[in-house]
Length: 191
Image: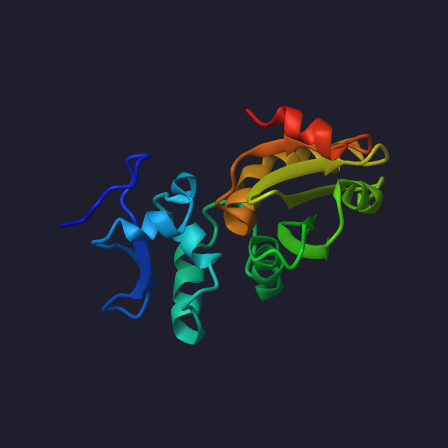
């Protein structure tokens, strides 16, 4: 029988269904959650699946992306976005930032530095979205530089959740990252 994680969700594994689409299916062992932090055992949407690189290639990826297209209002179909997000997840990068060009989410850069290194790379003239690793957990953030045009900031912030869901989901929460942020100040925001 299917077990549940301690947070009440059903542990899942990625498999191909009869239509060739990659989907998450219940697994029958609670070892799945023991191998991963219970806090990240979640139920995934089609758009989250489309942003997940594991076991997805060719036609299956195209079908999953098509199924989720337009639901968030952003186009996060650039495969470099998945690579960028994966680099933070696997620890090869400490942080990653993306930007918007119209409704297209574009990768900007990633780094394997401390918070000071991230803060140093935040642009002053545009809105960026990102993910950063603090210990074993990943947090998202949005940062509008002081010279970001007001309309670009307003439009971009309306797409923030779509970007987080399409590119950096799942995460452990959102942090406020500013040019004055330090690792200590970010850790104080964690509830």
